[in-house]
Image: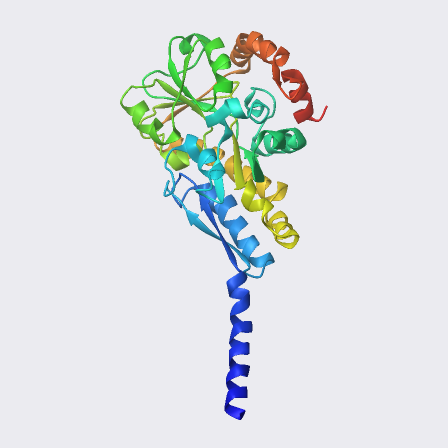
Length: 330
Protein backbone atom coordinates (compact mmCIF):
# COMPACT_ATOMS: atom_id res chain seq x y z
CA UNK A 1 0.00 0.00 0.00
CA UNK A 2 2.81 2.42 0.86
CA UNK A 3 4.53 1.61 -2.42
CA UNK A 4 1.29 2.24 -4.39
CA UNK A 5 0.76 5.55 -2.59
CA UNK A 6 4.33 6.56 -3.33
CA UNK A 7 3.92 5.74 -7.03
CA UNK A 8 0.70 7.73 -7.26
CA UNK A 9 2.33 10.68 -5.53
CA UNK A 10 5.28 10.52 -7.94
CA UNK A 11 2.96 10.32 -10.95
CA UNK A 12 0.94 13.33 -9.81
CA UNK A 13 4.12 15.31 -9.16
CA UNK A 14 5.46 14.45 -12.61
CA UNK A 15 2.21 15.46 -14.27
CA UNK A 16 2.21 18.78 -12.43
CA UNK A 17 5.82 19.34 -13.44
CA UNK A 18 5.23 18.83 -17.14
CA UNK A 19 1.83 20.58 -17.30
CA UNK A 20 3.27 24.09 -17.87
CA UNK A 21 5.51 22.72 -20.62
CA UNK A 22 2.55 21.06 -22.32
CA UNK A 23 0.70 24.39 -22.31
CA UNK A 24 3.57 26.33 -23.92
CA UNK A 25 2.89 27.61 -27.45
CA UNK A 26 5.56 28.20 -30.06
CA UNK A 27 4.87 30.61 -32.93
CA UNK A 28 6.55 30.39 -36.33
CA UNK A 29 7.90 33.74 -37.57
CA UNK A 30 8.78 33.96 -41.29
CA UNK A 31 10.82 36.54 -43.16
CA UNK A 32 12.59 36.48 -46.51
CA UNK A 33 15.82 38.24 -45.47
CA UNK A 34 18.76 36.57 -43.80
CA UNK A 35 19.05 36.34 -40.00
CA UNK A 36 21.71 39.08 -39.99
CA UNK A 37 19.33 41.63 -41.48
CA UNK A 38 19.02 44.69 -39.20
CA UNK A 39 15.29 44.19 -38.75
CA UNK A 40 15.93 40.91 -37.01
CA UNK A 41 18.01 42.63 -34.35
CA UNK A 42 15.73 45.67 -34.17
CA UNK A 43 12.26 44.11 -34.26
CA UNK A 44 11.92 40.33 -34.66
CA UNK A 45 14.28 39.14 -31.93
CA UNK A 46 13.27 41.85 -29.41
CA UNK A 47 9.62 40.89 -29.93
CA UNK A 48 10.39 37.20 -29.42
CA UNK A 49 12.52 37.83 -26.34
CA UNK A 50 9.97 40.16 -24.76
CA UNK A 51 7.12 37.74 -25.45
CA UNK A 52 9.00 34.86 -23.83
CA UNK A 53 9.89 37.10 -20.88
CA UNK A 54 6.42 38.46 -20.11
CA UNK A 55 4.79 35.06 -20.62
CA UNK A 56 7.41 33.26 -18.53
CA UNK A 57 8.07 30.97 -21.48
CA UNK A 58 4.42 30.14 -22.19
CA UNK A 59 4.59 31.89 -25.60
CA UNK A 60 7.76 31.50 -27.64
CA UNK A 61 8.82 32.29 -31.19
CA UNK A 62 10.87 30.23 -33.64
CA UNK A 63 12.31 32.15 -36.59
CA UNK A 64 12.29 30.91 -40.17
CA UNK A 65 14.57 33.42 -41.97
CA UNK A 66 15.91 33.52 -45.50
CA UNK A 67 12.62 32.51 -47.12
CA UNK A 68 12.57 29.12 -45.41
CA UNK A 69 8.76 29.08 -45.57
CA UNK A 70 8.47 31.17 -48.74
CA UNK A 71 11.22 33.17 -50.43
CA UNK A 72 9.01 35.55 -52.44
CA UNK A 73 8.66 38.92 -50.64
CA UNK A 74 5.27 39.53 -52.27
CA UNK A 75 3.91 36.25 -50.89
CA UNK A 76 4.58 36.87 -47.20
CA UNK A 77 1.08 38.17 -46.54
CA UNK A 78 -0.40 35.17 -48.37
CA UNK A 79 1.52 32.58 -46.38
CA UNK A 80 0.47 34.33 -43.21
CA UNK A 81 -3.23 34.28 -44.12
CA UNK A 82 -2.95 30.67 -45.29
CA UNK A 83 -1.47 29.62 -41.95
CA UNK A 84 1.92 28.60 -43.29
CA UNK A 85 3.40 31.00 -40.72
CA UNK A 86 1.93 32.28 -37.48
CA UNK A 87 3.83 35.58 -37.79
CA UNK A 88 5.32 37.16 -40.90
CA UNK A 89 7.24 40.26 -41.93
CA UNK A 90 5.58 41.99 -44.88
CA UNK A 91 6.35 45.22 -46.75
CA UNK A 92 2.86 46.44 -47.81
CA UNK A 93 4.33 48.10 -50.90
CA UNK A 94 4.71 44.68 -52.54
CA UNK A 95 0.92 44.33 -52.48
CA UNK A 96 0.09 48.03 -52.54
CA UNK A 97 -3.41 47.61 -54.00
CA UNK A 98 -4.44 45.83 -50.79
CA UNK A 99 -3.13 48.61 -48.55
CA UNK A 100 -3.81 51.99 -50.19
CA UNK A 101 -3.98 53.89 -46.90
CA UNK A 102 -0.88 52.25 -45.43
CA UNK A 103 1.18 52.84 -48.56
CA UNK A 104 0.08 56.48 -48.62
CA UNK A 105 3.03 57.02 -46.29
CA UNK A 106 5.20 56.77 -49.41
CA UNK A 107 3.89 60.12 -50.67
CA UNK A 108 6.88 62.48 -51.06
CA UNK A 109 6.96 65.20 -48.46
CA UNK A 110 4.43 63.62 -46.11
CA UNK A 111 7.11 63.04 -43.46
CA UNK A 112 10.85 63.69 -43.13
CA UNK A 113 12.53 60.61 -41.64
CA UNK A 114 11.89 57.06 -40.44
CA UNK A 115 10.84 58.04 -36.93
CA UNK A 116 8.52 60.83 -38.06
CA UNK A 117 7.01 58.58 -40.74
CA UNK A 118 6.41 55.81 -38.20
CA UNK A 119 4.67 58.29 -35.92
CA UNK A 120 2.52 59.27 -38.92
CA UNK A 121 1.51 55.65 -39.54
CA UNK A 122 0.47 55.25 -35.92
CA UNK A 123 -1.63 58.43 -36.04
CA UNK A 124 -3.62 56.70 -38.77
CA UNK A 125 -3.57 53.31 -37.03
CA UNK A 126 -7.35 52.97 -36.65
CA UNK A 127 -7.76 53.36 -40.43
CA UNK A 128 -4.64 51.38 -41.36
CA UNK A 129 -5.71 48.43 -39.19
CA UNK A 130 -8.88 47.94 -41.24
CA UNK A 131 -6.81 47.10 -44.33
CA UNK A 132 -5.18 44.06 -42.75
CA UNK A 133 -6.75 40.64 -42.30
CA UNK A 134 -4.17 40.07 -39.56
CA UNK A 135 -3.11 41.37 -36.18
CA UNK A 136 -0.52 44.16 -36.52
CA UNK A 137 2.37 43.57 -34.13
CA UNK A 138 4.61 46.35 -35.45
CA UNK A 139 4.27 48.99 -38.15
CA UNK A 140 7.16 51.23 -39.13
CA UNK A 141 8.90 53.05 -41.98
CA UNK A 142 12.36 53.88 -43.24
CA UNK A 143 14.01 57.14 -44.31
CA UNK A 144 13.09 58.87 -47.61
CA UNK A 145 14.65 57.30 -50.65
CA UNK A 146 17.87 58.32 -52.31
CA UNK A 147 18.83 57.29 -55.85
CA UNK A 148 21.61 54.80 -56.54
CA UNK A 149 22.89 54.89 -60.13
CA UNK A 150 25.69 53.08 -61.92
CA UNK A 151 26.57 54.78 -65.20
CA UNK A 152 24.91 58.18 -65.01
CA UNK A 153 25.35 60.73 -62.23
CA UNK A 154 22.02 62.38 -61.43
CA UNK A 155 22.63 66.04 -60.75
CA UNK A 156 19.63 67.73 -62.40
CA UNK A 157 16.02 66.98 -63.24
CA UNK A 158 17.00 66.47 -66.87
CA UNK A 159 19.31 63.61 -65.87
CA UNK A 160 16.26 61.56 -64.86
CA UNK A 161 14.83 61.52 -68.37
CA UNK A 162 14.40 58.00 -69.72
CA UNK A 163 16.06 56.20 -66.81
CA UNK A 164 14.65 52.83 -65.77
CA UNK A 165 14.30 53.14 -61.99
CA UNK A 166 13.37 50.39 -59.57
CA UNK A 167 10.70 51.58 -57.11
CA UNK A 168 9.54 50.03 -53.84
CA UNK A 169 5.80 50.51 -54.28
CA UNK A 170 3.23 51.04 -57.02
CA UNK A 171 2.21 54.15 -55.09
CA UNK A 172 5.55 55.72 -56.10
CA UNK A 173 5.19 55.24 -59.86
CA UNK A 174 3.34 58.50 -60.73
CA UNK A 175 5.96 60.55 -58.90
CA UNK A 176 8.88 58.87 -60.67
CA UNK A 177 7.19 59.27 -64.03
CA UNK A 178 6.63 62.96 -63.27
CA UNK A 179 10.40 63.26 -62.86
CA UNK A 180 10.95 61.73 -66.29
CA UNK A 181 11.95 58.25 -65.18
CA UNK A 182 10.40 54.92 -66.09
CA UNK A 183 9.40 53.09 -62.91
CA UNK A 184 9.62 49.32 -62.50
CA UNK A 185 8.91 47.03 -59.56
CA UNK A 186 11.41 44.34 -58.59
CA UNK A 187 12.08 42.29 -55.43
CA UNK A 188 14.78 43.88 -53.32
CA UNK A 189 16.75 40.62 -53.45
CA UNK A 190 17.60 41.12 -57.15
CA UNK A 191 18.27 44.86 -57.38
CA UNK A 192 22.04 44.62 -56.81
CA UNK A 193 22.42 42.20 -59.71
CA UNK A 194 20.00 44.09 -61.95
CA UNK A 195 21.82 47.40 -61.47
CA UNK A 196 25.11 45.65 -62.11
CA UNK A 197 24.04 44.03 -65.39
CA UNK A 198 22.08 47.03 -66.70
CA UNK A 199 18.55 45.68 -66.43
CA UNK A 200 17.82 48.89 -64.52
CA UNK A 201 19.60 52.26 -64.58
CA UNK A 202 18.93 53.31 -61.01
CA UNK A 203 17.35 52.30 -57.71
CA UNK A 204 15.17 54.55 -55.57
CA UNK A 205 15.45 53.19 -52.04
CA UNK A 206 16.48 54.38 -48.61
CA UNK A 207 20.21 54.47 -47.98
CA UNK A 208 20.05 51.81 -45.25
CA UNK A 209 19.61 49.27 -48.06
CA UNK A 210 23.30 49.72 -48.79
CA UNK A 211 24.01 47.94 -45.51
CA UNK A 212 21.86 44.93 -46.35
CA UNK A 213 22.28 44.60 -50.11
CA UNK A 214 25.71 46.15 -50.78
CA UNK A 215 24.39 48.54 -53.41
CA UNK A 216 27.65 50.49 -53.39
CA UNK A 217 29.22 47.58 -55.28
CA UNK A 218 27.37 48.22 -58.59
CA UNK A 219 26.54 51.88 -57.90
CA UNK A 220 28.98 54.68 -58.65
CA UNK A 221 26.68 57.53 -57.57
CA UNK A 222 24.12 58.29 -54.88
CA UNK A 223 21.89 61.34 -55.26
CA UNK A 224 20.37 62.70 -52.05
CA UNK A 225 17.91 65.48 -51.16
CA UNK A 226 15.47 64.22 -53.78
CA UNK A 227 11.68 64.23 -53.15
CA UNK A 228 11.90 60.58 -52.17
CA UNK A 229 9.24 58.25 -50.91
CA UNK A 230 9.56 56.07 -47.85
CA UNK A 231 8.63 52.41 -47.42
CA UNK A 232 6.29 50.96 -44.82
CA UNK A 233 6.86 47.62 -43.07
CA UNK A 234 4.68 45.41 -40.92
CA UNK A 235 5.14 42.48 -38.58
CA UNK A 236 1.84 40.59 -38.60
CA UNK A 237 0.21 37.70 -36.75
CA UNK A 238 -2.28 35.37 -38.40
CA UNK A 239 -5.72 36.58 -37.30
CA UNK A 240 -6.98 33.10 -36.48
CA UNK A 241 -3.93 32.38 -34.36
CA UNK A 242 -4.40 35.66 -32.50
CA UNK A 243 -8.13 35.12 -31.98
CA UNK A 244 -7.43 31.66 -30.50
CA UNK A 245 -5.23 33.13 -27.78
CA UNK A 246 -6.61 33.59 -24.30
CA UNK A 247 -7.10 37.09 -22.91
CA UNK A 248 -3.95 36.64 -20.86
CA UNK A 249 -1.96 35.54 -23.92
CA UNK A 250 -3.25 38.51 -25.91
CA UNK A 251 -2.10 40.79 -23.10
CA UNK A 252 1.38 39.27 -23.35
CA UNK A 253 1.43 39.87 -27.11
CA UNK A 254 0.32 43.48 -26.58
CA UNK A 255 3.10 44.05 -24.06
CA UNK A 256 5.75 42.68 -26.44
CA UNK A 257 4.53 44.51 -29.55
CA UNK A 258 3.05 47.85 -30.59
CA UNK A 259 4.22 51.41 -31.17
CA UNK A 260 7.33 51.27 -28.99
CA UNK A 261 8.65 48.24 -30.88
CA UNK A 262 7.81 49.98 -34.17
CA UNK A 263 9.71 53.14 -33.24
CA UNK A 264 12.68 50.99 -32.32
CA UNK A 265 12.71 49.60 -35.85
CA UNK A 266 12.35 53.10 -37.29
CA UNK A 267 15.30 54.46 -35.31
CA UNK A 268 17.51 51.63 -36.52
CA UNK A 269 16.54 52.37 -40.13
CA UNK A 270 17.28 56.07 -39.66
CA UNK A 271 20.71 55.39 -38.15
CA UNK A 272 21.53 52.88 -40.88
CA UNK A 273 20.54 55.32 -43.63
CA UNK A 274 23.12 57.80 -42.37
CA UNK A 275 25.70 55.06 -42.07
CA UNK A 276 24.81 53.64 -45.49
CA UNK A 277 25.69 56.90 -47.24
CA UNK A 278 28.93 57.26 -45.31
CA UNK A 279 30.08 53.72 -46.07
CA UNK A 280 29.28 54.24 -49.75
CA UNK A 281 31.38 57.40 -49.67
CA UNK A 282 34.27 55.48 -48.09
CA UNK A 283 33.95 52.85 -50.80
CA UNK A 284 34.40 55.43 -53.56
CA UNK A 285 30.79 56.21 -54.45
CA UNK A 286 30.23 59.86 -55.36
CA UNK A 287 27.57 61.43 -53.14
CA UNK A 288 25.53 64.07 -54.98
CA UNK A 289 23.30 66.34 -52.91
CA UNK A 290 20.79 68.41 -54.84
CA UNK A 291 21.09 72.12 -54.12
CA UNK A 292 17.97 73.79 -52.78
CA UNK A 293 17.12 75.51 -56.07
CA UNK A 294 17.47 72.24 -57.99
CA UNK A 295 15.38 70.41 -55.38
CA UNK A 296 12.69 73.03 -55.87
CA UNK A 297 12.58 72.12 -59.58
CA UNK A 298 12.02 68.46 -58.67
CA UNK A 299 9.27 69.39 -56.21
CA UNK A 300 7.55 71.47 -58.89
CA UNK A 301 7.77 68.58 -61.36
CA UNK A 302 5.90 66.17 -59.06
CA UNK A 303 3.31 68.72 -57.91
CA UNK A 304 0.67 67.73 -60.54
CA UNK A 305 1.00 64.06 -59.57
CA UNK A 306 0.78 65.01 -55.90
CA UNK A 307 -2.35 67.09 -56.50
CA UNK A 308 -3.92 64.19 -58.41
CA UNK A 309 -3.22 61.82 -55.54
CA UNK A 310 -4.62 64.24 -52.97
CA UNK A 311 -7.87 64.43 -54.96
CA UNK A 312 -8.11 60.67 -55.44
CA UNK A 313 -10.27 58.22 -53.48
CA UNK A 314 -7.73 56.26 -51.44
CA UNK A 315 -10.28 54.05 -49.71
CA UNK A 316 -12.60 53.91 -46.70
CA UNK A 317 -14.20 57.12 -47.92
CA UNK A 318 -10.95 59.06 -47.62
CA UNK A 319 -9.18 61.18 -50.20
CA UNK A 320 -5.42 61.35 -50.38
CA UNK A 321 -5.53 64.82 -48.84
CA UNK A 322 -7.55 63.51 -45.88
CA UNK A 323 -5.14 60.62 -45.33
CA UNK A 324 -2.24 63.07 -45.42
CA UNK A 325 -3.94 65.31 -42.86
CA UNK A 326 -4.63 62.31 -40.63
CA UNK A 327 -1.03 61.11 -40.78
CA UNK A 328 0.33 64.60 -40.20
CA UNK A 329 -1.96 65.14 -37.24
CA UNK A 330 -3.80 68.07 -38.76
